[in-house]
Length: 591
Image (tube, rainbow, N blue to C red; front, side, top):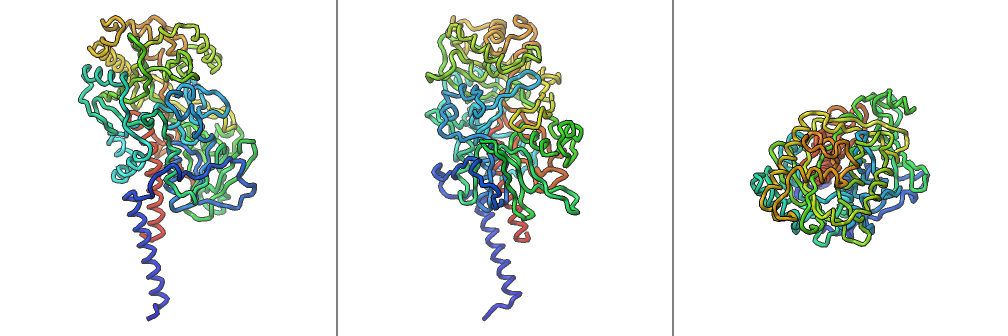
């Protein structure tokens, strides 16, 4: 019997609802095709984007980094996605792909290098990623989840979080074969009372543990870019060397809010292009350009403090005095430990998580390839240390490079040893970001105000004293050149003088741990903030005061997650992708 028009409509609605429910169930179970890098979508140069391109997209994602790649892969299973990355591909770049060249990649100052250095106004040399895969291409590789309290405070769905982490882990994370220096730290931490030993775990738990790594057993780095292979290549277009310099807003036409409708970007040849969303009301521009790039782009697009925008002749789309505010970076200090023989190279694998909010980690060795930097101190070197003791007008990358060059005359034996690091979780000291000009390729001015809050300084002192306890353990006495252990005064003086930073003001003043903390502060690239929830974005990370615009990256954090943020930022990309799909499919089905 033929169905009536009303019954046919009801039948179609039921089919749509069933299809949506099955898709949501598939997402919740994490079902997908076997993961393989052979499924990576093609990468195109931005110059290949045709002028006046008629193609429109459901989502335009600005930034193919730690969050942007898993987000793009997830959304592409249902919608057309354009992913715009200002850097190039990580594949084929040995300085990105191999741990032994980690230091070289981080110090590459070429205009198109994967790492873009910037110096905060505090004088600390830092780095931004400029490559598909983002910070996962230039970091130390350590993988550790956020604490349960962080997840709760973020208001995230714990069930979805617990599905999103494994989605990342199954593809690019593995357990390290623990290096000797990392094993020594593990033993020293336990002997010093940072207990219990929690074994190999991704979880954030007090005590000592070994975390995951994105380096495989051959030292090859796996990155967030790999996660693009989990997307639908037919729905996902990836443009490299696409520098987005402005979000385009449509005319209000009676609407209370300006609406994002697309972006303007330049290609590797400097030519200008535009890309637009389709007319669906749920389509969005999603900014995942990182804690530096995202507030910078919002300001360049006219969202921010109106006086600051007018100073740069930027038309004001929306006055919001909080854009770029609340910037923070987890301060780190390191102690150089001389040893009987040079330890094998290792990056972060072991961590001590203290109840006081101080994390203890370690690094050792130099890159072993013929291209590696001679006598390079790794992630604590002068090349990526701090310039805070140099007069402000002399704080240049050239000054750091000159100092590094002078190191080459020192005997390599001076640098036999490794580092133990202490870093502060959730610093109370905060700063801000402001534009220096209107060129998105240039760094904005960033201030972190390290140790301006006394609580941060107190925690640094606690961290240094914890390292002192570690050095007094049998495990580290065995490593010293004379087997008698090391005095804290000696290692502090050595750490100040051993090119960890450009020459501090108080080279021999180790009686004051407060001064040591201030003189030797460096970064480990855990900066965050600038687009805080409730001030710049809402609980769903939509930008307040406009429509069609969302932020998904570490700029929304008021605290960096876990001991190292990359696990949670990648998870957040997957999490928000699934959440957006669920909400949109639910609206389509009327549920």
